[in-house]
Each structure stands twice: as structure tokens, then as C-alpha cells.
Length: 217
Length: 207
Image 1 (cartoon, rainbow over the protein chains, first blue to last red):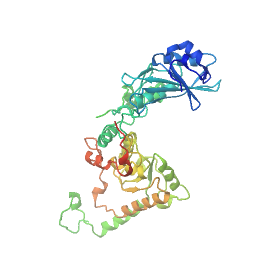
Image 2: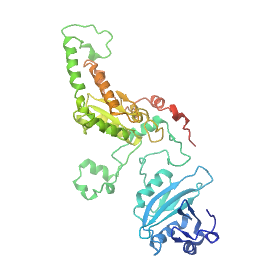
Image 3: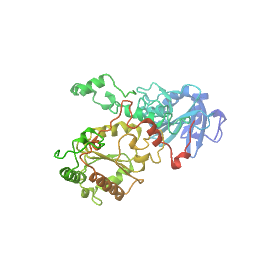
Image 4: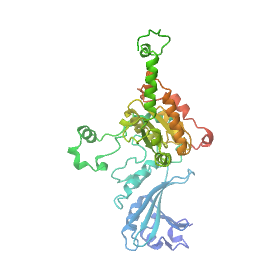
């Protein structure tokens, strides 16, 4: 494992089929660190230029990381360590893998640029990271909770400062769950019936026109 | 009915006053309970691995049709017994509540497995700690998951319970709705039921 600017890296000439020289020549100090851990190639990059780097990795001949396997995040128990947003990339034509990590300072707002414009599959993955870790993705078209219901008010469950049983009492959790509207979790787009809007029953049309969501009494 | 004047000795409801448990009513009880207990149509609410055992119970080897559960009732409108097979997250709580409210009386509920009955190993932010905080439960079947024999034993216990019911007790068929405060049980009761127990008292990871 090596730390520091890429120029100082020794022994890691080739990370995931990406020439370290090519990445550092192009992005310089935005490449924070590179390593091969357990055979996985990992590159830590600066949040402000992450989108640019990911776009470059996707579009540059010789890189061609055309498939986004996963977007997730890691919150470490050590409060000093930054929260990391993780992009797992795969190049189908080159049969290569690369993991990009973006460290985020937990004392500041957690914001990174959405890669939805590069890989459409990032849509729900980024919503899950937002839901579980509270990371905002700038430029995401529909950044809502995806696993927890939209009126969920206890925070972001996979953060290490989140108690295992949640913040509220069991009674309060039960009350809020019973008060939620199980039919209000879908938008017109999700149901793919926007075109059939006029043929829907009157009450459904009324509900959807208002974009009605669940509510807490 | 009504031929014999009976003093209203401590009857709990006014409705009970006009009904005496005389010869005819007793026989009606027997007839109704016999019919009800031997034609229970289950509403399967399978959410996890218990549902696999439930399917095995319904399939040919164990065959709950022998107990009068001739078919699964996938509409709550035709169901008699709700079988919650598996853990119930808070996200599903309003859904099982609505299914229960849609079932017509007479109706009963079986809580199948450790998770449905107590939350089981899932003492976390997502999980209802026992479906009896959401709907009234008649029979709890322990196990993780229970074997088909276990579920059938639970069903037979429910049949026994039904055979002990009487038509003159209207409280049996009373709906227990969610109250104005949004609770089915009093909040203190929910907190008490949901207290960690057994091994999970050691799970104290928190802020």
C-alpha cells in the first residue's frame, strides 16, 4: 500500500490496467493515492474532480470502463477517517476492474457529483447511498430515499453514529410505520403509466397529480 | 331463545343480557365452530424463510388441505386466518395492518416463527418486534423456521381454540382497530414487548 502523490509511488506501475503515469499526468494532485489490495486495484481521487476522472476512465480509448458495477460507501469506526464513496468500475471489452474511492470529510457537507449522466445505472445505486449514508449527489435527477420510506426521520442507518435500534422508541417507530401510506411510494414515471394517465380511475389520477407521498401524522 | 328469563348477573355487555347459553345456542356454537374450524382458508403473508416451510406445509407431502385449508386465499376478502410467515419490517407494518382490516370476521391470526413473534435475531431499526404490536395474534408458532409439523400443530391449536368459542360472546368478533393516536397497543406496552431479551441485550452498539 502506498500513500502520497503518484510520482512517489514505487512498485505500482499498473493499477487495474490503468497506467499510473497516464492518470497522474492527466490529473496530477487529484489522484490522492493508489494501491493494490488483495488483488483489487484501488485509486483514491479528489471529490471535486471525481466526475471528470470517471468520465475520462469511461471515454478514453485504452481505459473503456463502460460498466458501473456498483456505487456504495464506507463509514469507518475511526471518527478521524473520512467517509469513502466507492465506485466499482468494469471494462467489458478489456476485462479489467478498477475501484475508485472518494474520501469525504465528515465535518463538511457530504456532496459529490452524480455520475448518472455517465452511467444511467447509477440512478438507484446513488439513491441507496444517499438513503443509507446521507451523501448527496449533485446532478442526480431524482434523489430520494429508496429502501427506507420517504418520511423516515431517524437519519441514515449505515452511518456508524446511528444506533442499531434506531433513534426513536419502538412505540414511536410503530406509530410512524402504521401512519404511513403504503400506496404513496411511486411516482408516475416509476409506474410507467404516465401515458395511460387519462384512463386511470379518478381517485388515482387525483392522487398522482398532486404527487402525493406518505406522511407522518 | 328468550323463553327463559335469566337475571343479568354481572354480564359484561348489554348484548349478552338477552342471550342465555341454553340448549339451542350451545348446539349452534358446536355447529358453527365445527364448520369454522374445519374450513379455515389461510391468507398467506410470507415474507421470509418461514414462507418456504409454509409452502412445504401446503404442498402434497404435508398437505394442510387435510385440515380444511382447501386453498390459499390470496384475497383477504375470502380469508379466515392470516398466517404471517416471516419477519415483518416496519415498512410492511401498514400493509399487514390493511390486509388484516380487509379480512371479514370471523378471522384469526397465526404468527409463524421467531421473527414474526418477537423480532427474532433482527433486533434492529428496521424490524417490528413481534406482529402482536400491529395486529391481534391467536397462535404463536416458535421455530426458526418451524418445521411443517410445527405449523400444523399451531393450526390444530387454533382449531381447538375455535371449538371453544361461543357465539354469545360478541367480544370475540370485535374489531381491534388502530386508535386515534395511531396505535394498536398502548405505547408503553409496545416498548415493553420490544425490550431486548436473551442474547440481544449484549447488542449495544450505539452512538
